[in-house]
Amino acid sequence: MNQSGKLPRSGLGPLVLIAAILGGGAAAFAYTAGWLSPGRLTPEQMIAALTPPSGAPLGHRRNHAKGICFTGIFEANGNGVELSRAKVFERGTYPALGRFNLGTADPNAVDATVRVRGLGLQIAAADGEEWRMALINPPFFAVSTPRAFHDLLIASAEKEPEAMKIFIHANPEFAAFATWAKTAPWTTSYAEEPYHGLNSFIFTNAKGGEHAVRWSLLPTVQPVPVSQAELEKRGPDFLEQEIVERIRTAGPQRWTMVTTVADPGDPIADPSRPWPEGRRKVQLGTLAVQRIEPERDGPCRDINFDPTVLPRGIRLSDDPFPAARSSVYRKSYDLRAAEAGDYPRTESARP
Amino acid sequence: MSNAPHRFALIQRLLHWLMAACIVAMFFIGVGMVSTVAPKYLPLILIHKTLGVTLLVLVVIRLALRLHYGAPPLPADLPPAIKLGARLSHRLLYGFMIVMPLLGLGMLWAAAYPVVLYGGIRIPALLPQSDRVHTLLWNAHFYLGFAFFALVLLHLAAALFHALVRRDGVFGTIAPFRLRNRTTPAE
Image 1 (cartoon, each protein chain N blue to C red):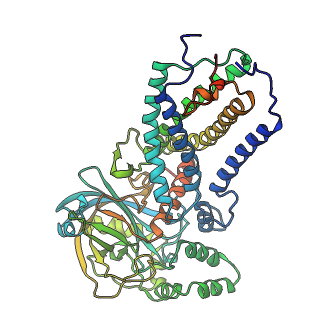
Image 2 (image 1 turned 30 degrees about the vertical axis):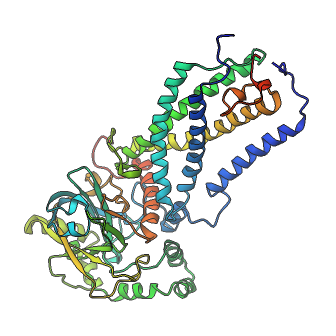
Image 3 (image 1 turned 90 degrees about the vertical axis):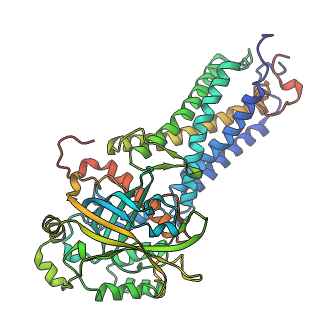
């Protein structure tokens, strides 16, 4: 022992050094956490932008809050094997679980007030792998980047009429979506809608060959266009009643899963830009929706349809949206799980 | 005293510094990943999960080594309160190292997320989906994470205090290489 526990000759220097090291560590931590960067787009900011002035839909998803569960099967026809080694593309039948939904933060929204309809889906492969996705009915996304989506939410909530003009000036790609929203026909059934993945992913086949793809679920029944006013007359929850009744009387409803393969040079990273007509399309199989269940006790309630839950053979592309969606969906899930007491369950015992 | 080791065994020292680097990385990756919607969110979360499970395996090995080799004694002149603090803080550090990965895994299981690590390694779920369990484990993982970081800072402060101020050889027992002889204890 050379120091006998006495505090030292070394003086203040080492203490200052220790304080500097600790302070530096804590500051770097705070910076990494974003506490010093208010400009960083966080999942909390995105969720705040999604939250209507009337308040957050406690216990519910922060967007696409109104929905109804379904179960069924995905029947793969085997055509997908050439593009991706994912097991769900091998000819066969795989359990499917999903949710028809409306693109609104209000779980009690009137159906005819919501322009965007969606479908969340989880397909389970025999080897235990899962494939999750969340698709919507417009054929391209409203904006090019997650930041622009945040700005759109902010601008559309502004009372100031100039806000949207300023937004569209800065994000001209939004014009195509605005046109779709104004002109696309409404239907009176979830079963008559197409659902598009919009984001680009990379399929990898058994030989290691890679293709950038987007996929859609196309309805097998003929859509019957109606006016928004006509839909409004049917009642606030018509879509849910209709899909229950349709499956009860007409049996399972089917969608064809079609993947579009990009040509070199097609915009992979921007879901607001559709690929040109004439791109190669491959039918992968059929989604058969066999049974509808109310969300409150249904199997879809506890599933986060995070589009980055992918089987081997499908991976992310340069499209920035799946990561942003994953981050925000996760936060939405954490919030609604913590608010489970506010969710109107009908079962007596909560899990 | 003559039978007691002067330093931790080489394998213990290597494991300490390897895990220290990984754990510090985990703090930064953890707070960084949950604060962003950028594409790096996904690689960060993949690294966080993979490194977390790796650290769980490493801490089991480390505990076994600790039980096998023991630890060098603290300097005899260290005040009893400091000795007690050292013992308690080391136990707490081990506790965090064991509990944090388990909480992380548990909160993912309870949210019905598949746990897939780097290289496509899948960890089967040992818990069913449950909002209540997810929320409990999420809160524990989140708040204990900050407590763990604070304790690591305290540990670092103590280590530097031993190394730079007291110069009592305690730092030399865990240093990755042999320091000057005069800094090793009991010589």
